[in-house]
Image (spheres, rainbow, N blue to C red):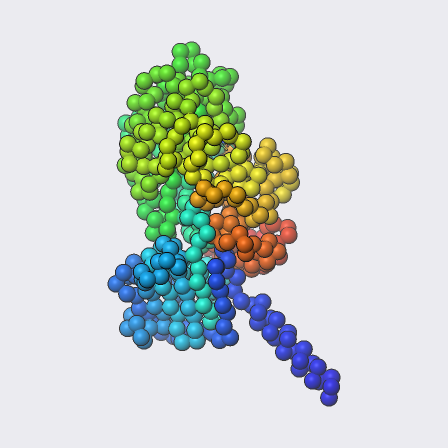
Length: 513
Ligand code: TNX
């Protein structure tokens, strides 16, 4: 008798334990989350409602609900199973990107101040669905747990940088990357568009930039460029997913690909190339850095950058243009940075530069992107944190991973190194993971370097540092393995994460367990 009482007792706790464990893992961790003891069962016809201002977000809600295979039907707010509402009264608690998601046994409601907030509410709802949602079709019956979530980001800037200059990535991959960023609420896609090995954005007034500079890449690898139309297409695609494109044209160093087409931007006898590994128009396929620059005494250089910045400003929706500014020593450097910043401002945009630019007296609202933290700044600008020992994803996931760098951190940049980053800077506006591609020559390798470490970047950017718990994060991340598989991402199977993966064949890539 006693025994059976004990076993009932035990079964009860096992049941509770399993139930608690089975809650879907939400990444990044929301600000407030309260699970309830009921669930929402999807009916065979799902009814939905959106108020006038929320109509724009219906597209995302419908895409999500369509994965259930149920019929969708418009209904009144009162009748609807799922409702989207814009509620401006929530602005002091939710800000621009926050949302409230409420799931009861009766109904699902998402409220936000903007459509960006609704997009994130829908994204969280997507993570309450089974992983199979990422395949576009859920084949088994399911319900989602009742929950009340109130959520908003810690930082406004949650970025991912991809170097398309050393190795080019085509529009298709760039769009896929936007999709993946959006699933984890990353919202700034920084494209490193030019460097010594390649120029990747069409500039109409200086066509040889892409006709010549667009044809080379590291190791004679993936070359190419985006036309302005393709750039705008990517930008529109990203904007719908609340991702802003941040274009970077690196100057006055890292400019060899530009010099290839336009050697007149060089000094006499190419004294701006040191050592002269190549003389324009010969392409450069190596990986050395810090050996090329514009001839900053020449007026034509300023005509050139004025035209490039004007065209970039014209095709860019967001308020930012990144002017690079890294790894260069030149007596005219500070002067150049001040001039370039002024040109950006005259074109109605805010300039961003790698931290070296803060040696020059540049005005607010200029933003500095920190990568070594070693620059002696003369100004107190806003900051994007990309400190290399935490955010350089061209470094190994583990020590000695083949084809990775280790100059910043000799044992690589682990998932934990990313996750543990905390900024001490009051002027930090956010974080950004950077993937340089000297050693990355395929989509699969890019996937391996970007994921899952970008998911840690996302949580550092979105969730409060007070809530951080790496071992708990690893568990949540592990359950996302299946999701990443369904998305066809060749993610690195970080050894200390309890990955729950799946073998998928067919439309999606086959991923090993
Ligand atoms: C430093 S970080 C660079 C890049 C390289 C990278 C390789 C920065 C602003 N400059 O040009 O690709 O190291 O890790």
